[in-house]
Image (cartoon, rainbow, N blue to C red; front, side, top):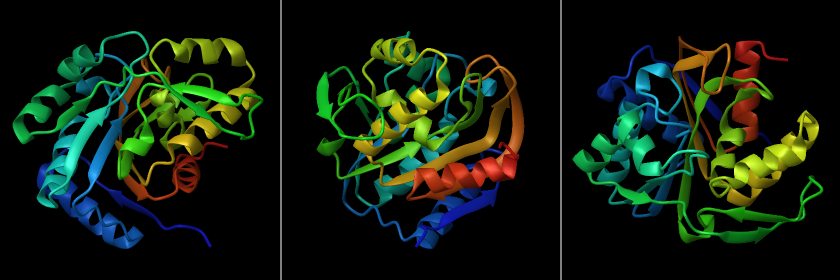
Amino acid sequence: MEDVVFIDTCVQYEKRKLKEIFDKGFKEIGFRPRSSRILLKPNLLNSKPPDRAVTTHPEFIRALGEILLDFSCDVYIGDSPGYELLHKVLKNSGIMTIIKQIGLKISSFDKRVIKRHNGISPYRTFILGEDPSQYDLIINIPKLKTHTMMGMTLGVKNTFGFIHSLDKARWHLRAGQDRLLFASILIDIHRIVNPHVTILDGIIGMDGDGPSSGNPQNFGIVAIGKNAFQLDDAIEKIMRIR
């Protein structure tokens, strides 16, 4: 039996509308985040401003964060940008302002957590910048973007951000141009992280030379699901990526 993927339309980052969508989506998929230690894992690739559609939009974080805080949750936010400091990316993306205004906590993703996993890739050891097991719930918050190697970067690809800092480049070097090998690595990492829910920011996404140098596009999509594989598949069908 497949998990439900909730998809709604939203053309701008307006807090009231976003909260309505999140509330409706959570009920639809049966997600209840009461009194939990939660980690928000947005896409914080680099420090470009939010209008460039490189990072998860700060107002997306505000609306979601306020809902979780209203449920008395202890809410952390973090990622491991490959080539820039996390605090710089948080500041330039506009998310640091939200963190301070509503009272989120920052997870620095600067640990070296060894995880062993017998998955579908040839590799069995992965080093993460944060330990997923330290949280009751992980909420994966990708950005809808194109990706020059993989076609698109959505929910499964977003958990690659758990890989510690510059180790990301090493994984890219190991995979080279072998898309299937890199896909198997991404799948193994995603299964290690095992986020409890994925919430896609596809309101303003990116096409062209993604994931960092493409063109912002208003796709007007928000998607919510417990299974990122199914969510990604649904979005790819909508975007006609095959």
